[in-house]
Image (cartoon, rainbow, N blue to C red; front, side):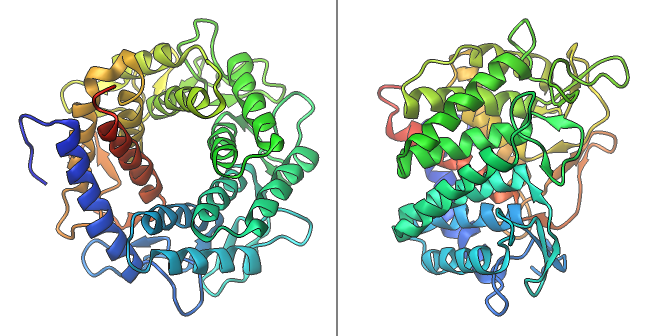
Length: 381
């Protein structure tokens, strides 16, 4: 992909749409779907497009159901079939006998880790909402409602929010709750039910009361068990610019879908851009301490997609959307179009040569969907 000096929303959306629907999705449909055993491959090598792992994770299964649902809605050939493939694998192979879904299976679809992981279950909920748009089966709506009921009844934490997993583990994190908000918003929009609106409100409130600092411009990552304070193992708490951007965008989604104003998104995005952006490289740092100082952490692709989403919706970083999109394009500049490099190494100053993980296609798809939405509304934007 080449840089264009005068980049408009329409031109960026056209380029992004072409990459996603005409290049990336056909490639992943051809090489990333396990048509023999069901489900999807975890990653593909950059040169010969071989699957790079011999296991299947629930989060990747759910994310790819979402991706191909978007593809099906935009006329990508074979995408609806892939959605059905993923749903069958999810509902027939990954279901846990005691409720919820298991976090990992082997390549053949045998459960190898029966843990019910909150982060993974959030993505199952997200996948069900978007698959419902494609196949329209009321059974998917009932599956989504049942999953919310399971999480609320079996994974509730006495101090607020939900446990990380069954069996429980520590530390507690904001991240699974963030994706529960994202998923419940999708369910509310496409499969309206009060159980989803209640979860939206609960996750929004939890962020405001537990995850944000008193200045309202930082989201902590890890917490003590009762959520009363962030973990500070080295004396300072950890924050991630990518998650700041993601929460800022989600606050805008709460307003769009739920009709409720949520304060703090502008401050979160401003903090992430002010302290998270490496001005020498134009890339977002992967991690900061709570004072805004950089830590030694790899720079990954996904935060740049979240930056783009926030920049298209949050006024505090509105002028940075071109920089965000051009940063994304740098990761997409690979010999095999439709793949990407996942990490940039700040020590070597080079992109890491490793297989492209399927999980990142979710981030790219959500970002490109947002870019297309902004382009369609560019007169009002």
